[in-house]
Image (cartoon, rainbow, N blue to C red; front, side, top):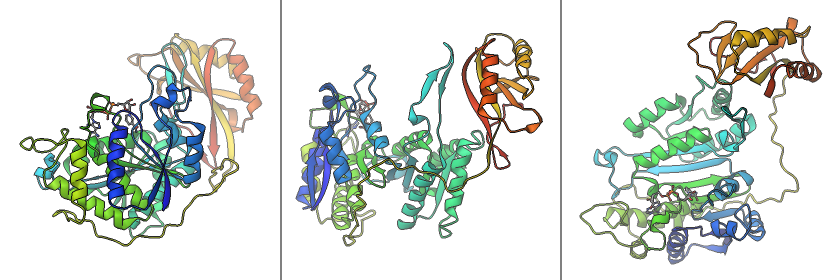
Length: 484
Ligand code: NAD
């Protein structure tokens, strides 16, 4: 028996989790369930991260969490338990699979265009760090972290998974044409890792073009890897291609702990009515069985589910309108009755179970993930983000006085567009400017030089934030303003 932690969740969570475990039990899946306390009702009991300390301990001991959807209490300033769980336990790869399900009518199934796409979304970084500030009463800033070690983890996982599933193609979706440093780093890491997998066709597509191509020729894609926010949006788009969120399973993979859940939420509008569709959670559970090496049970249950869908049995949220819907209990029983049956489309081969060596390990300190490539690093300037509602030339006049003997004023930009020394009066301004100073004669600077400039400049302006301009090796490690 393999022990796993189970959290039933809120809303329809308990109904669809019970349905899924009933199917697992009927299939004699060798799992032992440890029910843990997580969700809205745990917030309500006063636990601010939505889980009890015992739940956290159990999940950290067992390494696998199978969870139903959970509600985030509104307006209490608490963070989503779903996001907290994924980030706390470093489940860096969010794998979502989208396949044509016969019996679930979509424009593509009707047109005979098969879909089998796996999205791997980076799960920790990007704007999901939620590090946000109001810099002035008009200007909000979100920090977007893309790191080399974080990108390496998720991209290596994507390539390894693509190799195992004998994918025909692996694609990186990105916006590196605009976000040259952040998305550029992710894309560079993608091609670095690709070198170790010459057997896989690796390519990249700009994310907007990717969306267009996915809705016109989804059959051309196989595995797609993206940063967090872009991956979130693209994976919901893919859910739409195969019939909606009710058919979208999800796995959050980490080195130590992995979390399996449906993509949809708690569906409060239908909770407690026994009409919810358990398919997405069941598909997530099937993914979990494969992750644990339980290939035989996974294939038998998936074949029974596919056969049931093909036969036209459906809950109220999908399916043939001419066939009356059934409730969750009858849908669940129908799947159990169809064990040993094979669907006519895409039957899953009954592979032997694999012995998976558990990756559970005890940690006594946080792992520092540091890139092995160390480069010469020097400070060559600073961006001072100041609050002002003056005209650019007036700001420049004041700033020039502060440059002193170490700095020269390079340019001033507003929302990333250069407004001094050249620019256009047609550029609308907000009350925050980025004033860029670089070192005179390209002499390296130290932090004291920057603090000196800060103190001097603060005589004229409120400095909302500052960012050092670094040079790594011979490369300037900062973006240029539009028009610079
Ligand atoms: P939702 O996914 O719960 O519901 C959207 C619509 O889809 C509703 O009409 C609902 O009835 C329907 N639906 C969803 N799942 C269904 C199923 N299995 N069977 C039949 N119909 C289904 O999205 P929402 O209403 O935006 O969110 C409700 C709550 O869920 C919020 O508190 C949100 O924070 C939470 N949420 C949790 C997760 C998670 O736990 N991973 C994910 C998304 C949303």
